Length: 326
Ligand code: F6P
Image 1 (cartoon, helix red, strand yellow):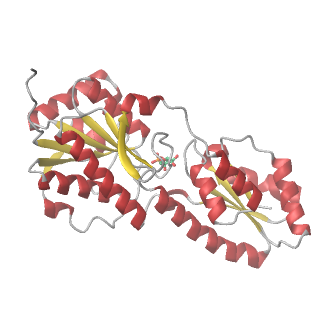
Image 2 (image 1 turned 45 degrees about the horizontal axis):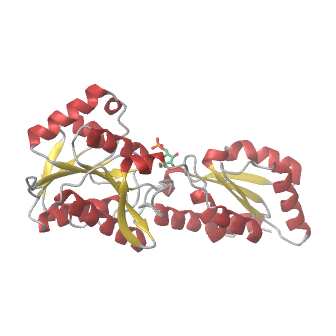
Image 3 (image 1 turned 30 degrees about the vertical axis):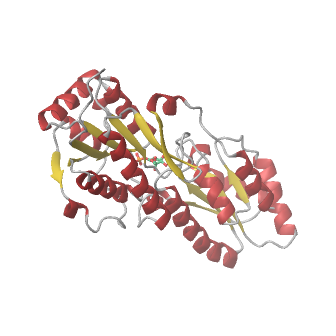
């Protein structure tokens, strides 16, 4: 019979990559669950950057009070190039050893999961929690921050709609998402957009302009086009669409507005459930997993498998956005 491993007693938590609303709720869940289970928990500042430099403090239940509803991340975040080298990874492993940390929770997107995998591969149990507004992590149906970002964009669309309707204009609204059209599809449907351009589908500007003109001929006085940043630049499309449709056209780039703000209840609840699950895995000395949500159940998946999955595209929702945009 093999020797039974003792439950883990000291864990760390960090946030990495782009911040997302709900990251603080995830930190809170990790810290409080760990303390509830009798573990010590350490907060690592500035992601893998801070890990390599030992920027680490012990956290208690009070240190995560009143953060659940705050946007951003109290641990700060960074994109650490140095961590991609063997030297950087070894530096991080040494720091973890010095602090006696036995397992780590990494909250972030796929770039952060690569860092988590690199530590796991070298025998250090690490769990990834998907925190990104982009919703581009294939193994989970939803990532922390997506719901809030979509609601933030919707609020912006509704305000912009007032102005474009008053001036009888077209507005191209550029939304984030890196290489993914997830935010664009969701907000085009929720915001009743007249057009949608995403990286997953080749853009047909002629068709887009034809639809704007047809809409105008039917009595539409304004149009909103949602453009995913991965498919082009709103400023560049502005002139083309104005020329071809003859309608006054403006561009709006929403930018970081979409990343900040208080998380929605759905994101706080998702983050809390995922944080709890991550600690449960580490407590049982399980690493190399990504926490996921499937059919509203919180589960986990192998990090390597998660990273190898081809990118997703919700064709059904895209079709819906196209049908409703006439
Ligand atoms: O991953 C989140 C995200 O906001 C993407 O949508 C965007 O492409 C990127 O981060 C921007 O990153 P940065 O923080 O470097 O501006």
